[in-house]
Image (cartoon, rainbow, N blue to C red; front, top):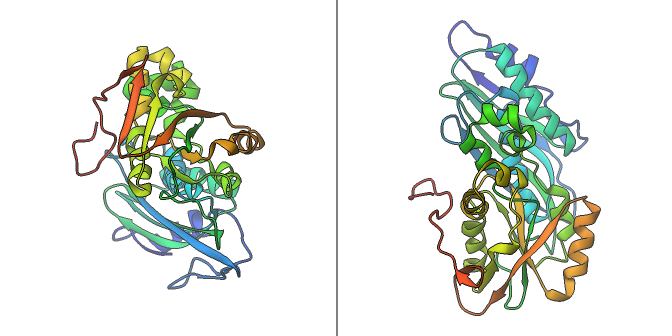
Length: 327
């Protein structure tokens, strides 16, 4: 890792103390932090799956979010992308900008990120530390099957639409106030502060699902990405969409459903599969101790139709878009 956090501060010492041995120890990291670049050894017969996300204080998380949650979320959003490809995560590069050399904050940040990295056997092989407004960029690389990686463009007419877990909890916690929900409903608070990427489910769905995407911008918006890439439409019944029970208990049922459909930040998987693979889908989810819900099916044409009680439902929110109207 390289570093620069301001005059009079030894950024290299900060890196050595808190970031140099972050995450898992992997034998395929030939040369880790400390040089100008990391050296890693890719396995034969596998494709490399690479993703990168940046999270900004005040944009993707509140400025007062605890440092360990910032670290966890920064890696989790990238792990969720690899989960949607059915890939095995391996190596991360991280760039961290922080306003000052706050060692207490940095240690807590490293703890949150490092714990999640070790859980999924991810080595943080290098990166950068600079002074600036709080922001974290992580580039994550993993291994995908040479053939059969999950993609967005594989849905076909007649395929069923599924989603893992429950939706709307993260945005319900944010809407209700993270500090208040932390006290009143720790589980709901964790849906935003510590999202759980569905890496294991993604890998189990390889060879079963025809397409997949992670639910980061909102179910409706993300499913539309799959439909556009695949050249099909879909019909979804809102009654079948799994709404987070914490959200339902905290907000009105109508608002909880709205957040489940268009809130975002859930980091569940939305995927399609042929009807004759329904039992295999359930077995894959059971092996990961996860709930999955069949919410609709793919149809000829384009676009997404959502019904409530047999009547068309119009969403107020369109899902998250950095440069658009958003929700």
